[in-house]
Amino acid sequence: MNATASSFGALRRAIVFMSAFAVISDAVLIAFYPQFFESRYGITSEFHVGAYIAAISIAVMFTLPLWARVAQRVETMQLLLVTQCAAGLLCLASAFAESLAGYWVLSMLMFMCKSSYLLMYPYLMRLEKPEDHGHTIGLLSVVVHLGGIFGAVAGGWLLQSVDPAACLWLMAGGDFAQMLVCAWLIGSGRVVRVLGTEPSPQARSARRGIGTRTLVLCLITLTFTFSAYLIRPFFSVYWQQVSPGSLPAESGMVFAIPGAVALIALFVNRHASRRFDHVLANLLLGSLGLLMQAAPSEPLILLGRVLYGWSLFQLIVKFEVVLFRFSKPDDYARDFSVFNFFQNLGVLLSSFAAGALVGPFGIAVTFVIASACLLLTAALDALLLGCDRQHAATAPSVPLGAAHHAN
Image 1: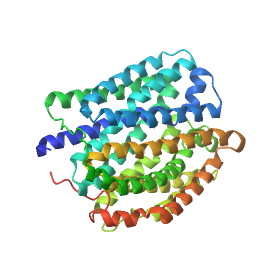
Image 2: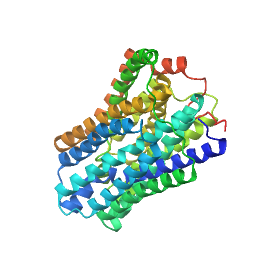
Image 3: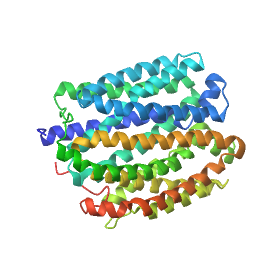
Image 4: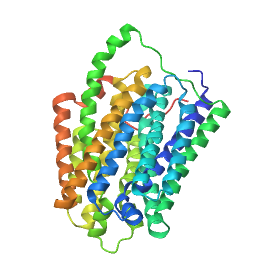
């Protein structure tokens, strides 16, 4: 890499900003699809909402690996310039879709183009020093959570005060903002070329063991993601049931509590002398937080959101750091796309499960099942991998989120 310290810093900040725009765009409707479909198209089926969110996951699952292949021959920022422009245009078109079928087609094409932004993460990891991966992933995770806060609150306010189509305009704005940042990076010459290279036979042989561990990590991530996302599609509806008279914007703020907790967790990780990233402890804490949210009590739900948010941040960062420890720079995009495939498979399964469970059993059951699945995740990690042990064996002895960039 020939990037100077200043140009790399500008590139790093630009990628963080792009991540923020991408997450805000994604989060505008994620908590409000039940209200969106009812208000815009008169659809009240819980199964339809679950199927739609599952379809988003399928779109991302099968297109991100294709974008990773394209990125081996086309510079990542140039690729994102085109795909995010296309995503923004498709989002605007979906805002004018009068039929439900038309909205489905246009929005799915939008998410297929939008998924390419996930290539920013392995791109940035190739430029970072391995000892800085923990801090960078923690920072990006906080950006994801804070973007989720802004997106959820903005989406709730737009649904409440403006119009469902306004949510799609804001989503398109996030895509076009990413496009403009890409254009600025390319025009200013700050892009670092990190095209993939064909590995040697020795490298291909060395990959086999790493690939096995990566697949086990992906299986653990699948159950973890299923647990984390099972409660999301109907959380805003659930809060309005527990707190009658609550407005969509208020529901969005409660939905976004884990984002605020993530910011606190990043600060604690950077300045505390001890580690808070232990997988078993955080899985148990997250399980308790989910179980507390099943109680129809506002204080318990709020406290449960805090515990859930803390554990979610620590576990997301830990799993991604371990993923990049198992991988090699030339394989980052490929391995991350496999990792993301399993993440989206977890979202897919959770979306279908939520849609199928809520109708006959009520929303509270999703919290109970999600809590049990986090315990299953703990068992799988203990039996098959041991993320804490693997991380200690492969990573520098720096707490997650505590590393400082040398530049």
